Length: 597
Image (cartoon, rainbow, N blue to C red; front, side, top):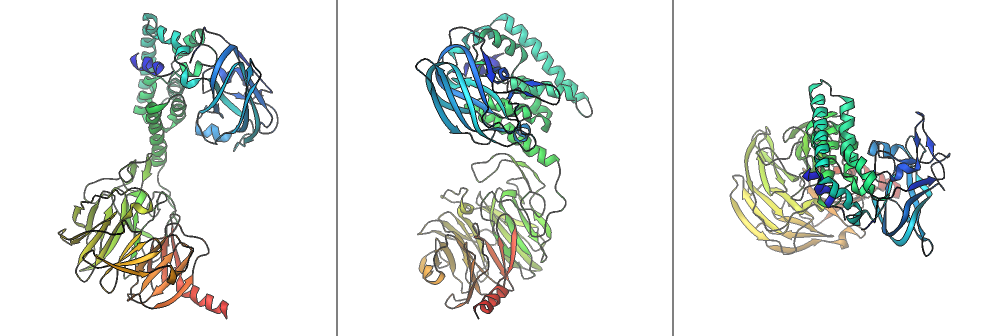
């Protein structure tokens, strides 16, 4: 009882007495089952019901008038667009308003506002002041449904965010002994539905629908009393999600419960809305996860979480290539390191099995399916930022850096050897890969790590041997030159730092690389040549001293998004839009020369 009462008290306007009201519309849909989607369903306080227009087309020029039964001092009109009965599914299947005119009809003449509604499930709160008895919504055009052309509006309300006085009679009733008895009976029905679902081998559809209905449109006994005590226009504010039903759905973990939770979210505000949104996000991720991985992931990757798929959430995805042509990739959003063979087949991943997570740097993100569950144990990663290859006895090992500043070293067989955490003062957040980088210095057998503007170097045993603060702040890329110094990218410049962390000076800039680019990356190939690729699709090949430009070529007509590159036998490997693109730079150069001739 206290949870329901708290939900009611969270609402905040005014109403004098309970008034019924009515609604009219330009037309009414009668669906294939003979159900009439009446205008009054857009003011009944329930999001599982809705008015639908019945004319041909997708609702252009249709209208709905909500008569509140008496004049109100209106400060705000709220609209829940679309068919919300089955949540996102029914929302997309049916048409919903796009451009609308909202009109208050009452004293002093009409007050109108025209606006465009975003095409997503949400409650639209429109500031609109006037004394009025009627609210008219005219649909000028609509978003077309993916399956059906009929246009839906689930609910219309006034002063949703200032409704406490208007629902006060219901709050007072909720405190009564009569309400307490009703709530006890209701709790028993919720428990019975939950027990029936758990006892059945494949659940119970009828019981699940009941829990979804109570979660999304509030307890039955509250609905009935609200009709008696609350004015038209305030019903949806008075009826709050049933916390007992929500808890039951959370315990059941059935993705079919999503529509009920989505409707519950649309009734809430503030922290309670955020909490319900997290439940919804988790269920969508869980639905994807239990559906299982796709079996036919394309070679060289595609967006997703399965082995061979890549997930960046818009961040750069660093990669390196070994002497055998195998590509190692820091799969940032999937919390793992992947290895692809020379043909682009995924061979292996480092990180535990797939799971659901909300880890993302140190701020978190909505729940999603990750190719490897994020974690802080050995062999686990929280947002891997970069990977560096290390020649070892028996083959190639690697070191990986994650957003927590953890460095982990793996041997040539892929076994974890050692790990440590870099102490750093810089904040490392989403955006350009979090500005965290790792590189291996073969001559001194050191691992260089950059986190923001902090730089440190370590032996392979994890002993810190260099510590510095970078003069120019966090770079855009880091590489070890074949001539045994550090190369860092800052904007459009390549800057040399000595191995002790002291700045030497700019060695390349837009004078050599041209103009128009905003981002670039650099790497060293197997012959110790230095390559630079810009986001405009240009590749530059330099000698190991970075003194002589051997040649340049534009290998991509499409601008690259935060390019990260590796080069092997004059093939450029670049991660772009969650896939690895393999490009023959030498052939592109020859083609360009032939075209010029």
